Image 1 (tube, rainbow, N blue to C red):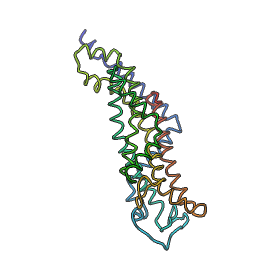
Image 2 (cartoon, one colour):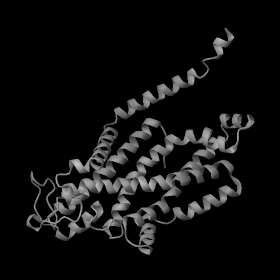
Image 3 (cartoon, rainbow, N blue to C red):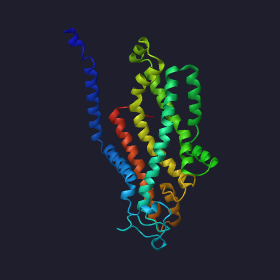
Image 4 (tube, helix red, strand yellow):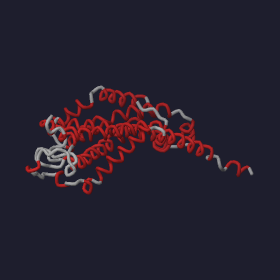
Length: 298
């Protein structure tokens, strides 16, 4: 009977986590803005992945020109109209989402693991390791992200790859600061002390005990960051320092279409709205995840 009574010791924790998730999911579903954000993000991802099949004029994503249909207004044949060389703007927007999501995956895929690792080390070990890592982090945090990206990209050469590298070099510090704060609060928890007493290595404690408890914070931060990465990437392209023509980048489309305002407004306004929808979707979804996971992300 004693063995039987002791065996289901994890059941209360599992039950409480299940109830917490149900409460969080209920709050998420009751939040119209969060649901709208999820719908927008799903639409953006579907548009990007399905661009070759959804685009009415896939050739418009390349060097295709058709001067006979240049500056055509939105219609059933061209939902977003055509640009100055006759390319279908709607098709280019769909392919532009591919470039934006590629930027998000590349930048966050490089900067988040690096920033999280530094935050884990600084928060867990403290001492001179904390001092060195966090002072370097403070220096990078003091530099405006867009200004730094402009300087790095201009020093290299304008291209999509260099733009992604430039943004990646300055994005890690936000995650370092966030994880440092979280780990600093977790390192004295009972389960961490128990792991130390049991003889667990520092690597085991960091990556098997502490890191899993940071996943919810990281998930919310990554979702919110995705919108900002798209915005900075579009800003670089707008200034001519990101993706270069004929790559269908949303920022480049806004910049080229601005030359024909206000008469041919669709060439600039509609790609700009596409950027707005993507950023809005990720921000609303991030807010919803913050309620779902019940975490605070500064």
